[in-house]
Image 1 (cartoon, rainbow, N blue to C red):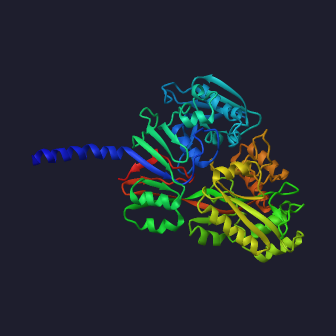
Image 2 (spheres, rainbow, N blue to C red):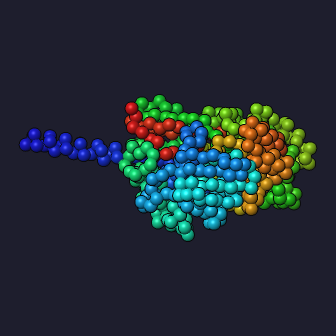
Image 3 (cartoon, rainbow, N blue to C red):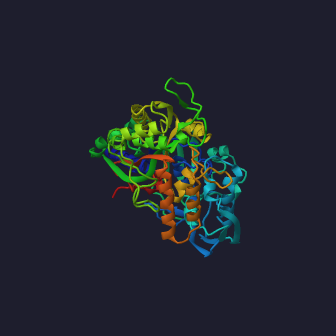
Length: 520
């Protein structure tokens, strides 16, 4: 009897261990608003989509380019790029991946007219030629060295499954047919995303049969889930819990410096701005943010070191430009603005606002690390120099919708550079807004500087990398010296996993389940 009982127990253990090991549960720190890979060009959405789908060119953890669905690429003349595609790649429904899917994926962001800004990767393409099922050529109107980095930002969908599909079709799984390491199982908005391993994946197979991404945007709840063992890994470790987790023998913490810049957009275009008043709360007929001296005063009023040390608890780096050191296009001449409240007051007086004015600063409360606390800290600093600042913090889904409609006077945004070079933030955040050109899609302040635009356009058409980088540096210097945007800090990316799991931290913040491995 005892022998039979022991045998039964051993059988139960043998069958239970693989079942537990077969599933991975990860808690995400930001909401995923859609599974449609061309809907909203935001990191949480992209991170999930890039696990179900693939791109022609992928990024390694340091954002270097590497082959994806394209095995190779080259410029065959000044205006034409050729991509050689992988053979034998299957979509999740068994259909074959071909150049026709690439051609449709390039068209789709413009067809669906989504607000997310994916046309920034496709606007340069004026013609597509399918040479054969595994070769496609993309033609541009002018020399365009950024084509490979653009194709590292555009997800490839099935032309058969995605043609005519809506957001709802992707969110339900009807159109969610990719070539990636994971197959779509279920998306419960605001709660979880369930994926299953694609055993026919063309690349390295995931270690887990199933992954569930739980959307736990509450910091205490995410930490509690990790410590209780309800999840095996979390992203966005709260700064207040970092030291405690790092000293926990059952937890491993992974970190790397991000290229995500947390910054302010200021309404520098409109004559009258909706959330600017006099000190008594009466709307001002004149917008002070149009004056570069006022924008510079705001920058000088902000104590970036204090934000890093007190709000971010050391898990950030003060920012003086679009990206941290080490990325293409970073200017050696730009440093973080020195905290100078007296200098800020002097500039306000010179601009005609010796007594300051009133301002409402908007920001999200569930998207970036300590985002609401950052907005509150900045508001206090501005108030000290005479800009009486109120705060309105909103859930990101509501916030980004209003910000894209340019409803705010001053707004906080975090920008991660998918391509790893300054071209992308210059085009998205600072270029003069143009729907036709796909420029300024995230330029919430509608900043416009023709001289900067000219340098950027010249850089986009310059093939020589040394010359191109110099142009991007000059464009960045014009933007920052004019306070077209106000950089605050770069985040430090953090993950924490239970014992037995390991993850290679990524500068692009992506949390990829297929890169989570059993610890050696």
